[in-house]
Length: 540
Image (cartoon, rainbow, N blue to C red; front, side, top):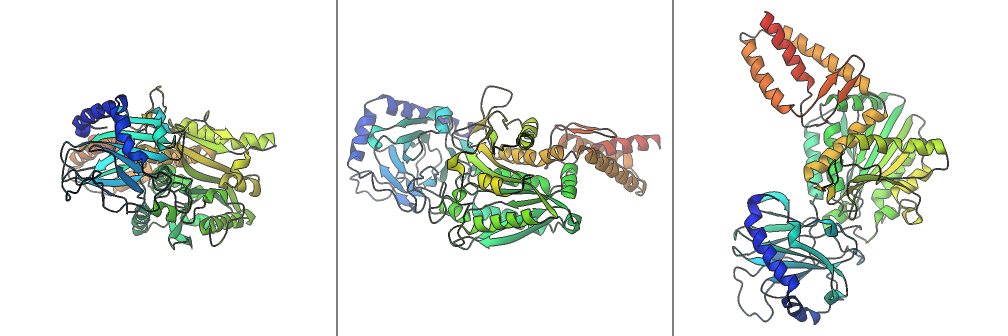
């Protein structure tokens, strides 16, 4: 949390400690006892003003206005308990009241210095990372970057006043009357954001990426498929395919950030990405459940189905995205010219830390050992990925998932995994949990992609490409006539060194070591070229 809300934090913490330690809490809840808590909200609130009970005043500053009628929004009901306390009800997934976890709503019409307690009273999960220090996210119109509310302002407990449901209470102090504040369970990633992102990629007209629609959802939204590979691979008789899917559970938004990190890296000009594109066909379905994403569901589709339990027999009318994706995978599996090496389904986990994988168990010892290779390599490349937290199982409850179903019906060479990443934090070299940020999720995606370089043992080809690029840069330099080359080179070198200061590259004839892989950073071999150019200039 930045210092922008620091003054508010101390004020809010004080009222929360008062609320949970005094009898005022019990008294303030008495009015809620008369409310029928069995009535679950069926829709999102839309510019709903929470008037104090019995108030006949007209709208004024300080009467909070709640709104959740937007993509991925979720807030079904608001009860004003007192002047500073509000009970909030998560709207259940459409057609399935079992799931009540995801929330995402805005608050406006505040007055400066107003301190409140929000109680989210109808969570469906008993276990939660709120017990381990997770806290809701907040941003506002004047501070558009998501920040976590301090953990000291958050309490997670079982409440006798709400049928012994678990309640998450947090305190907050509004500081700017003109701001609209937004609160969310995790970093949102909407369907519109994905479509905008894909459109920006298409505008680049890159010959190594193809975006197509494989089907429409029940509500007629695109189910997109990205194919990323060098054009020559599509003409070759033999192809190696790595297949990703994400967002089958709409509330698991970190999976979309990881997926974008994978795409960002694979379409970049990084030498590792170029080598991967030259040898592998990457296919990605970034959003399997766009209807659930738009509706603000946590786990289900429009019709209330958990789509990750219907891979065995998907329905064309109820589970069209699962049917189309499975059919595509089965067709590739039967094609003798395609080696479908990987299927990886991206998810987020609400009770565990770190990134980790679920894999399958096989009777053949050699196959099982091969199945553990990729997770071990990813653990060595990503500080937030834990191999020890990974699990290989064949639980009956998971039988209808993509990992289990495809693991049993694809060929023996296909490795099928579920990649999970925590909603909250990871443990790196220190024992202190490091909260995930949007950038940290993207970085995990980049590391997921670059690990295929190690798996397919393509490291030496990166060294060859680096040497080839250096030679090309030297030829370009020889053909240019620059009057004041020394000054120009020093300027470019200074700028390049700042960009690559974090990276360490060692190039040898047969080996290349790349310690940090960042698609946003230009390849470091350019700095080596500049140094050689500078040396040659000083000679002249």
